[in-house]
Amino acid sequence: MSTPKTTMAGPVHLSAPIQEPDPVGGCRECLGIAVTRANARSVGDHSKASDANVVLRTHLREGHGAE
Image 1 (cartoon, rainbow, N blue to C red):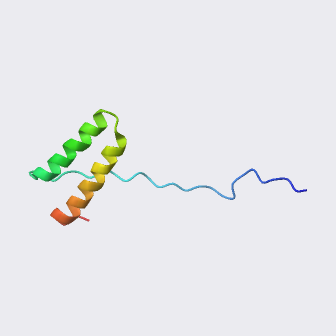
Image 2 (cartoon, rainbow, N blue to C red):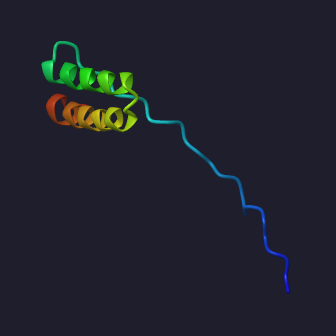
Image 3 (cartoon, helix red, strand yellow):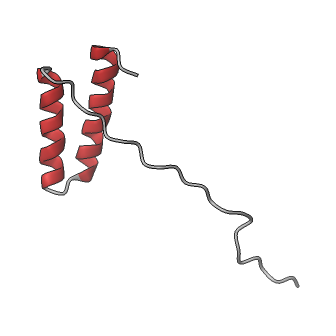
């Protein structure tokens, strides 16, 4: 009978978290999404805040040509 392995094979490499997108000044849709994100965060709803980041990234890409 062999001894079970209790350690990992190698180190785990993690990347830095993705930075939150910034709304474009003067865009009402960007502002609305950013307000939704801030409100969600203020009540501890981090899932909704994350969803707002996805919506804002999509809007920035499609509405403002951002990458």
